[in-house]
Image (tube, rainbow, N blue to C red; front, side, top):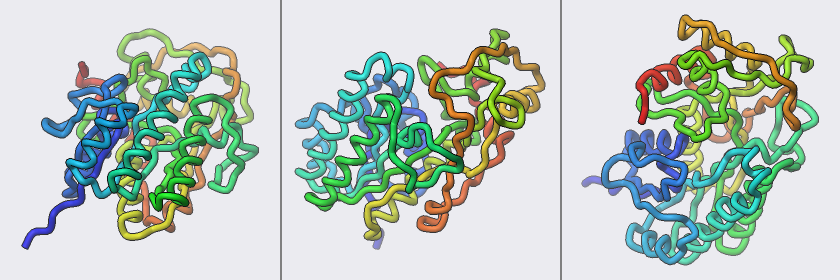
Length: 328
């Protein structure tokens, strides 16, 4: 006799990381529904029949969908993510990221799903005193985007205490790459992530600006931890399985534990594309830390996670495949 697959609701599943996670969930036999208002995501990222076009702040519609579908768990991505924009429009970020999450948690408390994996961020740590960054470092966000994620993590703690909704918060670093076949990748507008911007510079000939070349790093440019989006998606699925199996609420960093400078990314793009990257050196950006690298030992030990695409050149190669497809 066949066993019914677990039903998973993925909010923000039409976006970059959400759509990759949906793809892997379906490949691993889960029954998936996506809620996305398409303000940042793209309809073509979601398989036919899986998308419910809905804003999370529409609590009554969300609760009705949950009653009809009877989900086993939720993976929550739906958020605005641009740090600079959050400094200009804090109300928009708190309204979407915090109020939308509260609406989701209220619907969960009313209708039944008792497990949620939350897409958090390394921005909760602000400007940490050292690197690699551990989960027990102080929580000190320095922008409304990071603060909005801290507020949701706080709500999750209380919804576990009061409503017994268990959660895993995944604090991740620089999501990058595309699925290995180049079908799903970064389509942000405006684009703020380094690898697609460097690839765009190669394709258009318009120079990219490298902000600062006088940091105390091997080549003077900032160091970041680049994690392949497929490895990130798999971390969400492992967290989901952990919660469904009875795991307690927790927080985990998701990163490779290895940092690369901006210039190392530029060189990797040149190797993969066979073309020179046009760039100019600009002044440092306010708030940019010299190095942000994740200590991911806790995730590896507790959930058995291991990145499959940790090599920077592989990450760039997959992103290049996607870029050359000339997406919509």
